Length: 546
Ligand code: ADP
Ligand code: MG
Image (cartoon, rainbow, N blue to C red; front, top):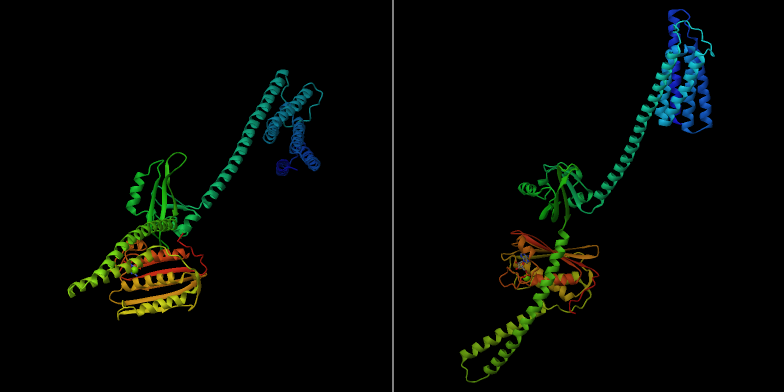
């Protein structure tokens, strides 16, 4: 049985039972027999009908039919009550209204009108039958019967009927409206839930960081990607002013805010943002957040970590530049070499002439010695600059490193104040690559370290293996580099060393890259430098010579 049919039954039983109990109590207190037997009869009929309704409920599941049966039963019971309490004189005719209102509420317009019509028929029939004496007047003791004129009958009928229909129409109008509104509300609620879920999904799954800011610049929300990029948890971000998030300094934010009006976007890039213990580059855009009413309700800050992209960009630029420079300088070097050979050859012939005095002989020797030196420099230069063909083979990188350090220990550049410490673990490690070129890289880096410590110091070389990559760290306590020097370290022809060419690191960079490795710098001015080279054990060595 539907819930509201059951409910209606329960309410009816409760009301009737309460009435009966009240009547019993009154009767008991006044200690006289009141003429209210009809009340007990009505209650009995109601209880009996309730059993019938339960039976109907078992047989029929339709909500409408269950409710209609109950309303019809009520109308009949009410008619009995009205008859026993004096027909037109009965004060209980209002009960019809209760049933009509119930029907209108539960069964809407049609139910209400049917209920009202039922009441009109029953009440009308009762009145007529009693008026024309077909039904005898029940015994009365406390209602004073009034004379029944025909005009009174009609007036009574007319007002009651009008009341019945009016109640049915009004109530059903209201309950229908209510039904529609609650349906709409349900639909809206559903839409809202879907929209919210969509919103949540979008915000949670975009790969960019998203922070919303209140109008005074305090973070009110951050998405998971944002937490990941900033390496902070939501609690530590929400509630912090924007100046503490690393995107803006206080005054920059004030400035940005002034330029942010409805519909504008301010894009920005910030280098060296401290994230965890790293400095990273963030790209971000701020837009004003407008509520539906068009009032500014804060800002959204969308951001990305551009560090890796920037590094890649810089590497590509460097490679381009190095290729161009290499070609150009190789060309120039060749152009110098040919006339140099001619000069040297001519001087050689002249030197053999007997007409020269010893002073002239000495000058000739200087020319020959210096041209030889220049020729050697150019040869070196060409070897460095022109990408050499690689002969990749398996070799022991740890042994190569140890050899290079030994060579450096015996080099004339080393003074008494220099110490070279090598901690090479594991002591043998095989990789695939061009051993000569890798040795060149070690030599370049180690020599730089020594040159960066003109007054002596310690070069420490440590190695470790992670995930099939051999990593070598060269750390010195020399003069270090400025931020700008670090950025330009791998660019050719940038030198700060007295006899430097600015090519060592550029060449090392290229060699390491062609071996599928990485080279990184970390330096503090005045404190020292650490250069880390990381080489894969099984690199597919790229050959730059086409
Ligand atoms: P060069 O040694 O011919 O100057 P490099 O390419 O080897 O060229 O080095 C470029 C520049 O980088 C050096 O001139 C020096 O200023 C700087 N540099 C390289 N290594 C170090 C280091 N270990 N400490 C300080 N500065 C260094
Ligand atoms: Mg060098």
